[in-house]
Length: 81
Image (cartoon, rainbow, N blue to C red; front, side, top):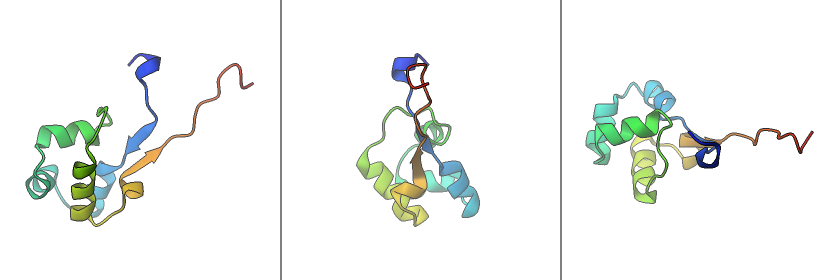
């Protein structure tokens, strides 16, 4: 991914599903989003997500948006050193 398109938002869907012993297919059925789209999200390849989708995922998994996503700290650049 080109540096200008990189983001530091990380999705923790995989961990949340494992903690709840839920499959991606089961989540897909309950949320109404395709398995393919959830897989893109789970594997940190998503570039965007609708608020309605993140809300539905959080409702089903009984978590907050902060449990589902985190933001990595910025990496130091040569100017910061």
